Each structure stands twice: as structure tokens, then as C-alpha cells.
Amino acid sequence: MSSAVPVMELRAVTRTYHTLGSRVTAVNGVSMSVQKGEVVGVVGESGSGKSTLARIMVGLESVDSGEVLLAGRPVGVKRTREERRQVQIVFQDPRSSLNPRMSILASVEDFAVVHGLGNRVERRRGAVQALESVHLSETVAARRPPELSGGQLQRACLARALLTEPSLLVADEPTSSLDVSIQGQILNLLDEIRSRVSLVLISHDMAVIRFMSDRIYVMLRGEIVEAGTTEQIMENAQHEYTRRLIRASLLKAVDA
Image (cartoon, rainbow, N blue to C red; front, side, top):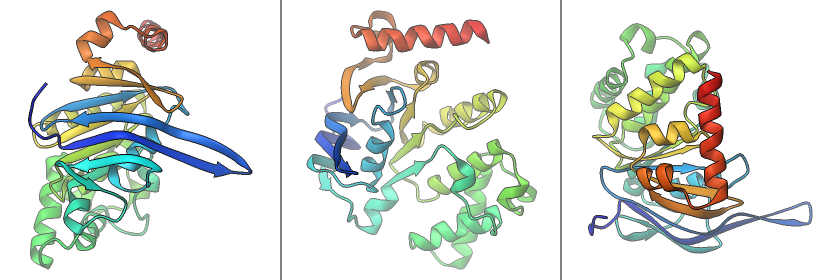
């Protein structure tokens, strides 16, 4: 493990919700880190707390206790403009992430405005370059979200996230809403951009995590129950829950 300061580090973070008179702890004492140039996988079934963890990382959720550190400095939900630029997220459903009345190019440009990037000419140039980097043509960029496929929309969301040149990209189930034939394309694209940005890949699918990740954290009921390198986890999982996730991915592969 590198001794360098992590791009992001979580120290014993906890997030609890109070709904209808009940108390639900979505994330409970989670500690993890992401080093520069690393792809970290977070895997677990629905309800394990993965998406809450993702939202904590990007500052969309506060924590009840614990610390979130960005490049060694504590951050919360009230982040500076530069801190917001440094951590971006791509959500599961790209159709709900883009304005259906704006062209893809306009949506990416608008994101640059929100983050205070450059002047009008620079924002247009940056948006075009970001879209080209995810293999979307000018023709596609001129269209609106309802005219595009799920895979094209997810590429657009990736372009928008990369526009700010973040140090960390959090991808929350980025392929689960896509057809199987398109999932591989998006994963290959994420594999392409890993040289430019550290990546946290969140998924319920151990096969996806195995393909991409250098290290893996396994979540169950809001807690990390196992962590290690991808090789350690896949070849010598210690927790029965982890072994069950691995078996499920193997069965899925056989069925396919």
C-alpha cells in the first residue's frame, strides 16, 4: 500500500436516518481509502449502504460521526468550489441525470458554468473535448436525451463528470440500468479513463468489481465486512457473505 496521502479517506463514518419513527443506520463506522491512480470496488447487495456511501463521498450526504478527508483535509457537505470539482459522481440512471429539454452538448456546457470553468469559448471547447473523450460525436452531442440510447446517455454523464478534471470519480452502479450488450462498453470506457482519475466503482455485481478493481470493500448492512486486494478477495474470501457474492457471479456467468 502506498504511503502517499490518499485522494480520499473515510474514517469511521456513520450515517443514520430517522423515518416514520424508526431509526435506520445506512452506513455504520465505515473506514476506507482511495489512492491516486487506484480503482476501488465497493460491492454489496441492495440495501447494504453503498449508495449512501457514494453520496457521502461527493458531499451530497452529511455524516453523523467520523471524518471525510479529501487529499488529507477534512471536508463536509459545504465544500469549496474547487473541492466540488475534485470529486464527481455518475449515477445509475442516466436518463434522470440529464435535462431532457437540453442538448447533450448544452448540458455539459451548463455543468461547466455551474463549476465556474472558463469563459464561453473555453466552456464550449472543454465540453466538446470531454464528449470526444467518451467517443460521442458532434452529431450525437447535438441531440437531446430522449433521442439517445442508455449507453450514449451514460457516456454523456461520464463526459460531464470528467469536465472538471476531478481527482476522484465515483461511479454508482453505472451499468446496472443498461442492456447487457452495452454494459461491457461502459466498463471498457471506465477502464480507458482510469489513467486520468482515481475511481470508486460501486456495484452489486462481483464480476463487474473483479474486472475493474485493484482493491475491494465488501458491504453488508452498512458495514465493511471484508476488504483486500482483488486477488485476495477473489481467491481467498474470508467472509461467508463475500463467498456468496462470488458464487452468485459465477452462476450468472454460467447462465449467460
